[in-house]
Image (cartoon, rainbow, N blue to C red; front, side, top):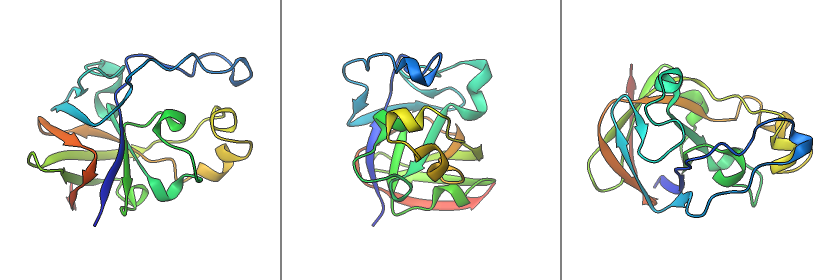
Length: 158
C-alpha cells in the first residue's frame, strides 16, 4: 500500500544564494506528522502558502524511490514524500490522497526540477541523478489534512 513517508511545512527558504555558501539553518519542527492544506493556497505554515507566484506550485510531491538512501524532504525541500507512487509520471493528472481525513485532490501541473543545491544537500552527483525524478508541483483543489502513514491514492485525468 502507498504511504506518506514524510511531510514538510517550512516557514523559511533554506537554499538562497550560492550552493557553495551552504544552506540556511533548518527551523525546528519543519518535518511534521500532519499538514493542513487549503484549496488554492497550499500548506498552512509553509513558506509558499498563499503566495501568488506559487499558486500553481504551492504543494510539491516527490517519490521516495527517486531519492538515494538517507535523503528526505529536509534535503530536497519538497512537501510530501510518497512511497509506492510514480509521481513524476502524473503531470496533467489529478492526484487524490486520503490518509484518513478524507481525500485531498492535487492538480499536478508540472515537474519540480532539481537544482544545483542537491549536490550540496545530498551528495555530489545528486542534481544529475534527480533530473526527471525531482517530483511535481501541484495546486491543491480541496481543503483537508494529510498525515504520515498509509494513504489511499486515486489518479484521474485533470
